[in-house]
Length: 200
Image 1: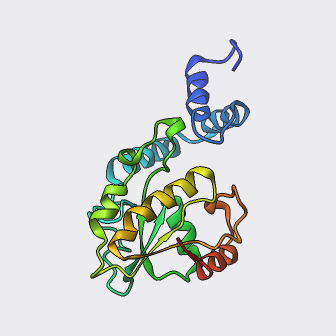
Image 2: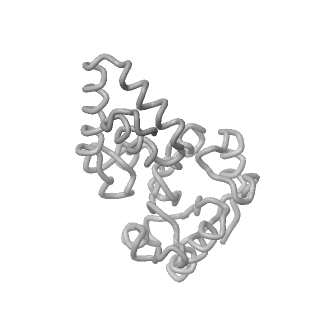
């Protein structure tokens, strides 16, 4: 922002611009919008940010984000706990839940393997996945990582770890475009990919 702007307004715009997908022009619009808001609304907005950051954490079972020790999906006895859908991020869980067609449980990796970016197996939640699967209680692990180089590499790596246990490992049938992002897929496309998943 130009030098004629008040420093706190410049700092606020820079904070907005540090968020993913927000350029400096959008950040400036947001900063000016905040200035038009009632002080009570601004405080409420700030409180919501702090509340989310302090009260939301990872589920002790699936690593999804929750306020509880165990998330509502993992604690739901009507879900099929013998089928685990492995996804990259909590946003992907939301995408699958919108379809209303999947009744298993999830495991959130919080990232993908990427040696170029120094993301190794210990940097994502693979160890926690291996700790919760067993031939006695797990029928299938669905690898639902995005169809990218990193997503495919992560899916293959985990499949190789699970195969010696005799657990069925499948990969989504990607009617999803190669290089696409699950978060932006519509419900029908996700449902079709889920129904036509392939063995790994």
